[in-house]
Amino acid sequence: MSTGAIPALVISAVVLIVLIASASALVRRRRHRHRSSERLGPEEQHDAVDTRPLPEHVRERYVREWHGVRAQFADRPEAAVHDADRLVSVLMRERGFPTEDFEQRTRDLPVEHGRALERYREAHEIGLLAAAHRATAEQLDAAMAHYRTLFDALLSDGDRDGSGSPGHEDPGGPTFTGRENG
Figure (cartoon, rainbow, N blue to C red):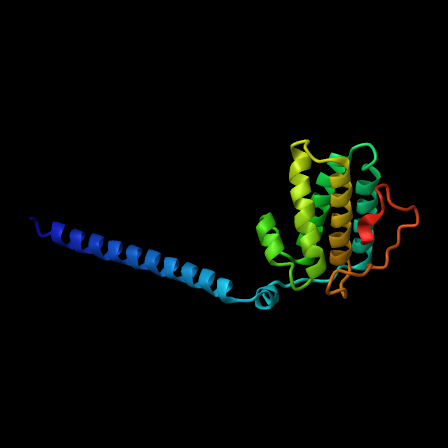
């Protein structure tokens, strides 16, 4: 072996050891973070979410968007359910909730909007049926009511259990059966 090959082998070995150590440290950090999040209860997980209130003009914009979504329900109920889901996701993102996927969204809601969480899950399941054109009219109606419950909870900064109204009454009445408050 030449004298130039020995330093090259040593340098290669050192670089390889550093890469392995770095990868190992990264894997350990990810595992620790994952285990920590599993040990945390919903309150601690929620504390990590930095939610923010909405300015009044943004709130009003969302109310107008909800009215548009709701108005299409009579003629296009499946599309309205899809749009309600999209609107709720956008609102969640604007409030500061992580919105990577449905499971992430539901993990971050329990403490903030406990009552609305189960309704959201039900609405999401119906939305999946609607996407496959297998939801009944009653299910679509229920999904809109459930999305309305979550929408109201997200729009309301001070309503911690998701049971109240954010103060934007709908004088025109609902397009669907009106169960959105119950």
